[in-house]
Amino acid sequence: MNDAARLAQLAISPSGFVFDPHTGGTFTVNATGRLILEGVRDGLGLAALTRHLERRFAPGGADLERDVLEYVARLRENGLLPAGFELH
Image (cartoon, rainbow, N blue to C red; front, side, top):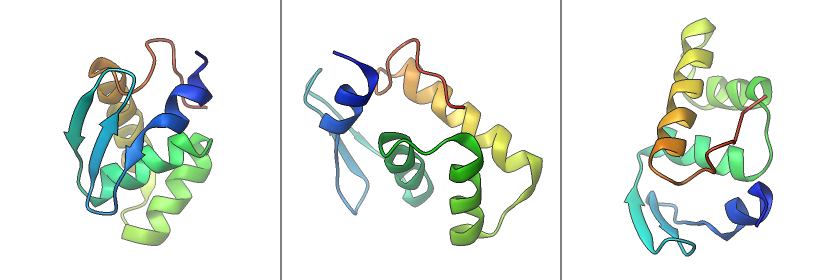
């Protein structure tokens, strides 16, 4: 299964509950985490995802980009994103 197909299968509720039917795992994410996960699932790149978060939460700056990359790394480590997934 390719990355896009696996990501498309994730069920993400507005409350932040995430179900991965591939593994049966369930997770809970906060509002920021939900937006990042939805953006990754929807195919947003790093720049577009960062702009989206800036509009929603107004943190801005290089720290936001670094934080997004770190969060994506945690998603990979926890099996919500494929091991080879990279955000560009």
